[in-house]
Length: 249
Image (cartoon, rainbow, N blue to C red; front, side):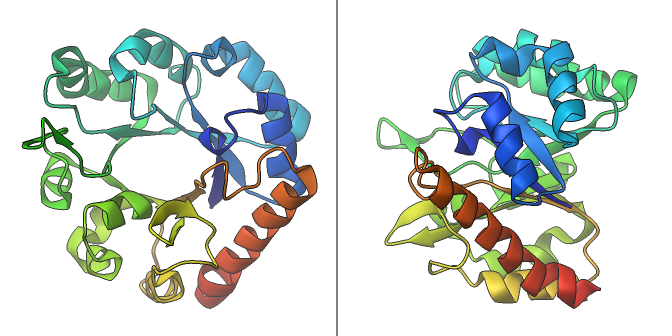
């Protein structure tokens, strides 16, 4: 299943986002819960699902403001049983978020039939010496449970995406698809340095049963130029179908 991430559309409303996803032929969407109250409004999101016949299959939090958004996040996701929660490992001094991830999020998933995946974040240092996030390596994420693999974030951590397939094995339950062009992450799939063709083909031949989310930067998506946005989305879907779906079928 190929989803489209709402965080790729920071300057569009959710209705336009759902409309683009439907026109481009995606299987569903992932909602990035943020300070926009519409992303925290379950009733409104369900209306959009029905109106555009575009199911919400996953929720996530942005790299920043995670602690501020916990309450709104858990209130909305509990209204969508069986969805995936793709969440970053805690920042080094984000004690509230760390406690929530360790103690509350697993209970929330069990009670409301949700699926928790820990997502790798881009490697960054605080004060030039302290890793911004603890337990962010693929080894740590795999030990904790299921993983959402963000390919651009993996590149930023100077790790090879092909090695992640065997290393994570059946712990890899979600993949954020993007490429890296001229050292710019979250670029379009067909334009960049990552071996996405080989990566997708290997997953297909391995009979990978997980899901994918297309997550691009607003610049790569040409946000604001509607025809280019739609063209980019359709090209991305066709790329995915050529190297994964058609190979798997």
